[in-house]
Amino acid sequence: MRVISVLGSTGSIGTQTLKVIKDNPEDFRAVALTCGSNIDLLYEQILEFKPEAVSVYDPDKALILAKRLREEHPELSVDVYSGEEGDVICATLPQADTVLGAIVGFAGLKPVYEAIMAGKDIALANKETLVAGGDIVMPLVKEKGVELLPVDSEHCAIWQCLWGEEKENLDRILITASGGPFRGYSRKDLESVTVERALKHPTWKMGGKITIDSSTMMNKGLEVIEASHLFGVDVDRIDVVVHPQSVIHSMIRLKDGSVLAQMGKPSMILPIMVALYYPDRGDRLLEEFDPFDPKCCNLTFEKCDTSVFGLLDLAYEAGRARGILPAVMNAANEAAVGAFLQGRIGFLDIEKTVRAVYARYEDKNNKEYSVDDILCISREAMTVAKEYLNI
Ligand code: NAD
Ligand code: MG
Image (cartoon, rainbow, N blue to C red; front, side, top):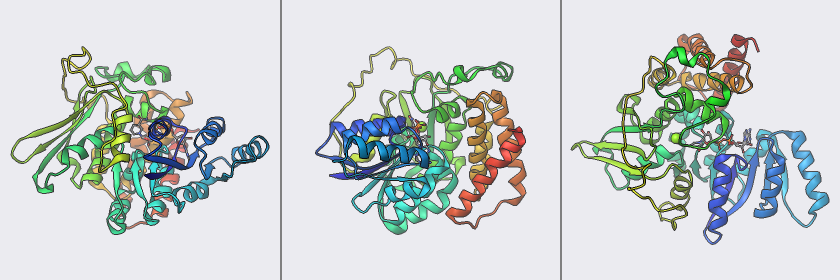
């Protein structure tokens, strides 16, 4: 049985993880849950999963939750924590052997880092952790001898294709992308797109930040950097393949020319299961894959037009430069996407902001840093982005 701390339990990945845990009670137990501020859903999750510890990032909300639990369910013995400290306590709980990292943004880095330090296996959805801190996280995973189990669907696909394969046989990674809601748009078309439109992803249902990242193609840029860390290849050995049907979740090409792909319906349930059951396999929870389903026929592939979606090129640049630049790019993007979601800036301002902040740090790249340095630089880059946007 895996005993799991679910970080970000109220989000899209968090709730789907709890579904997998609920459907397989002999295999999994949720011992800790954390969220940013959604205490109503966390309250329901506490009643259902009876964790031993929970944390709410917002300390006022944590107090309200603790009071409600005391009054309405005094029989439950659950410790309620808050802030970054609370996330870390839940991530390092001695009873847990595995941490599912599904916090959004670079806020997920510190708890995951501490969990690795404490010897936990990590099932990782939170790609920003590797984008910002991959050069620290990956060697630490090796040093501590823990498993880093990719949950991001493309990385789960690449990982499965690589099972049993010698690393030297890997030639290239072909990472697929749906292309997002604005595939085929011109730069001019993008000037006037709304938040509502950007949130309508054609194939995946996900949290707000990653859905906007998919519409700018930054999500794929972050994933290229994530893959370069996970699989130890330079970003220039990773190609982005736009595949609007989202049936092939990614491919690898081996040195003899063989191409292996992993396929399935677009659902995160399977990658979550693959990670949590590794090295075994669980029983299928989703409908069977049907190659004759019209949605699975006519699989198509195209290049991404980076003259329209420029953030993908910038991510390659950051992935080549390494050092603090991927973290700077990631943090500026978090600030800009947040502002776009609040309706304070236009769609193309996201790219403009990220480029402007990145340019400020380009000459100051630094390759020697700790996790706390990365968090500090990320917060600073967010502030620079907000100043640039005048918000
Ligand atoms: P989401 O916005 O739906 O959920 C985010 C979760 O993090 C929520 O529970 C929120 O309360 C919590 N949270 C935010 N800040 C926190 C903090 N400081 N401390 C504790 N909890 C905090 O996002 P999501 O779509 O579930 O994505 C989560 C992560 O997984 C992201 O990094 C995303 O890129 C990655 N991911 C998501 C999907 C998907 O299908 N949703 C697929 C691949 C990768
Ligand atoms: Mg993905």
